[in-house]
Amino acid sequence: MAFKEKVNTALSECLLEKPSIFLIDLIVTDAFKVIVNLDGDNGVALQDCIDVSRYIDANLDREEQDYSLEVASVGVGSPLKLIRQYKRNIGRTLIVKTESEVIEAELVDANDDFVILSWEAREPKKIGKGKETVQKELKLSYGNIKEAIVTVTF
Image (cartoon, rainbow, N blue to C red; front, side, top):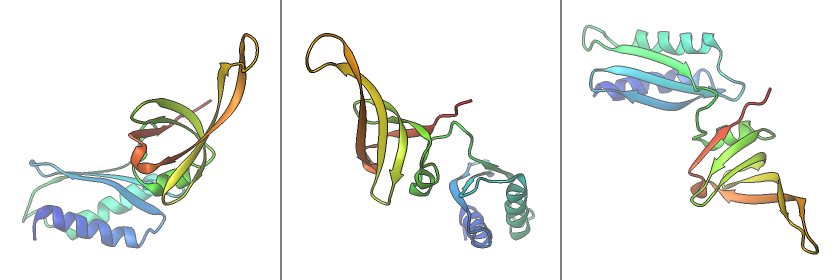
């Protein structure tokens, strides 16, 4: 069994014991540096990262293959990659890049097929001069999203 497969097997077994934690990225470099990025339905605690790291370490043999291991939670500015992450962030503001535009909007809903975004925009009045604020809403399939990042407001 290849080294990456062994890491993936150990990681999968560990995550079965922590159903609220899920894998975002697993990278194994040519120099055998293992990088695991996690997210969770309720966030990822430091103890979760420690537990996953220890589980992987306990199930791999450093005598067979020397490696370095880094387990972390995804950062605040990391793009959303999984539908589960979109569902977790309903009600928050996202910056969404599509093929043709960049939208900063509230994530109103997310299901297995698409997201619904809502935002206010200034548009020319239909009658007369000047602009008016209008409420916009967009139903966007995941395939049309190039990148989505949660914005943090203080």
